[in-house]
Amino acid sequence: MRIDLITALPELVESPLAHSIIGRARESGVVEIHVHDLREWGKGKYRHIDAPPYGGGGGMVLTPEPLADCLDAVIALGDAPEAVVFLTPDGETLDQPLANGLSLAKRLVLIAGHYKNIDQRIRDLYVTREVSIGDYVLSGGELPALVLIDALVRILPGAISDAQSALSDSFQDGLLDAPAYTRPASFRGLDVPDVLRSGDHAAISDWREDQRVAKTRQRRPDLLSGAD
Image 1 (cartoon, rainbow, N blue to C red):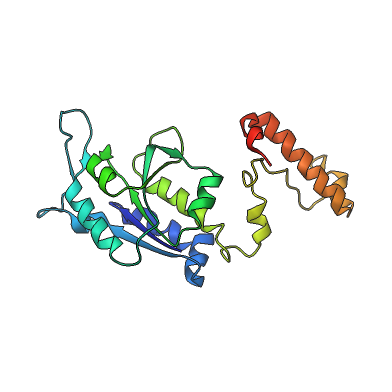
Image 2 (cartoon, rainbow, N blue to C red):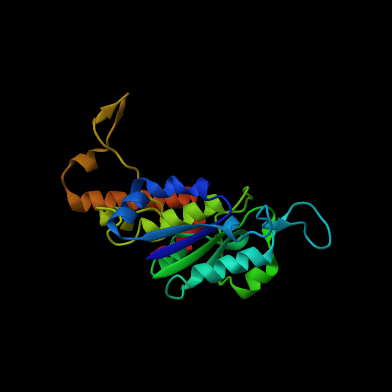
C-alpha cells in the first residue's frame, strides 16, 4: 500500500510515522507513506495557502489553487489512487469496517485540512471519501490522518508479527475485546480467573466470548445488532 499525506504541518506527523508499528511497516516495505508539505505550493513570497471565507464569518479557509496544484502533482507520482480522503468532522465516522475496507486499497491520498475548512470546490473536484474520527473538532486534520493511518497499517499483512492479535481486536467482529491478564497470577488481592490457567482451550475460548458479549452489552449495546 502507498499512502500520500498532504498537510500544512509536516513536522507534526513525521515523528509518529517513524516509530512503532507504522515505522516498522515502512522499513519492511509493507507500506509506503509520503508526506507532502502543502506550503511548497503556496502562492506569493510568503507561500500563502489560506484566505478569509467569502460571505464573512470567523476563521480562515484553505484556498483552492495551492491544494489543487499539490493534488495534481501528488496524484501524478504513481498509479491512480483508489480514494482521495479528506479528514473532516462532517465525514463518515471511522470504524473498523471502514478501516478494513480502506486497507485493501493499493494507494490512498489523504488531505489533512487546517484552519476552518478547505474550499468546497476541492471537495467537489477531487475528494472521493470524507472521514471523521468523531463528533468533535480538532485544530487540524493531522491527528485524524494519523489515527486513520494507524488503523489501516496495523491490519496490513506483515505489519505486526502476531496476525491473530489484529484479527481479535475490539470491533473486528462487532464486539468489544475480552479482559486480558498476565503474570503474576495474584496481584493486590485480585486473581486471574481460574479458567485462563486451566489449559482447557475450549473453555477459555467460551469464557472470552461470554466476556466479550457481556462487555459489549454493558458498554456498547448498539453494536450487538451488527455482531456476528
